[in-house]
Image (cartoon, rainbow, N blue to C red; front, side, top):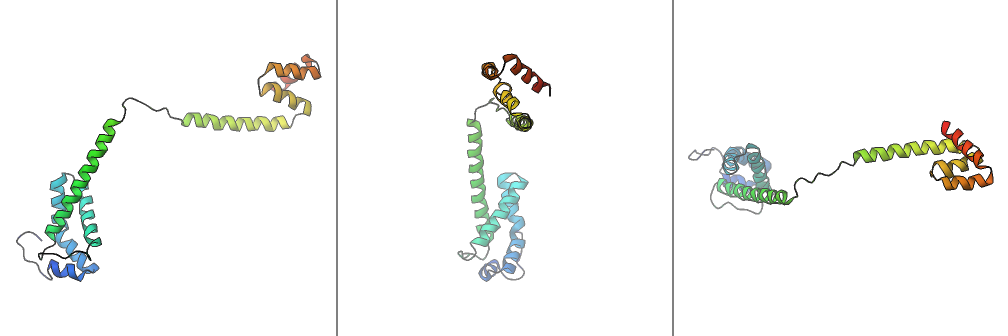
Length: 178
């Protein structure tokens, strides 16, 4: 309905008072284009105007039982709601921009994905090694656990006291070759 056009059918006041889905659908069809145009003039954004139009009619639907139209047109109230919602959106956008402006610049955060992949691969590799160690004879298992997995030469010397140091080195060498 454009300004100055005669309303065919029930007035906005009658539709608002009826409060049903069919009545509200007629109100939406009657005023949606005008509310969208108003929201577009306020925001200069097609998508934001669509969002504000949707939010305006959602607000009208939710408040339909609490509100009585003073005049016989819902349009002034719908315009006021759209304006209020547009101001709220501008405040939200302004706060967001201020927050982004306070963020430190040039501070890149390293991607941890590569480290996670390396850790998972390392864990899988270690579990394969431990399963292979479990298949070795008991004496060789001890050598591997003391020397190779811990990479500690002094532990190899301790292992070497139980047998000769040369034997311990030979065991480690054989295990590494496998």
